[in-house]
Length: 52
Image (cartoon, rainbow, N blue to C red):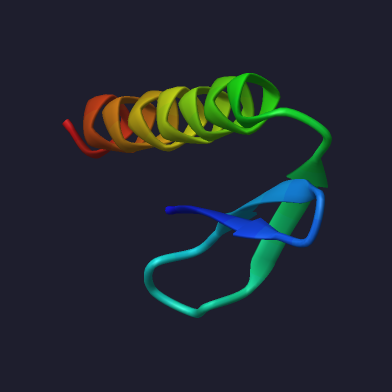
């Protein structure tokens, strides 16, 4: 999820509430969130392929 904190936009984990990084623009925060989702999907698919 993305939340505004002061002048920054922060990417926050839905599961843990951990701050995954803050950025000066909402666009940059959205780009980072997209990177995180892509990484998670890649790892999920890779793990599935390795399991057979």
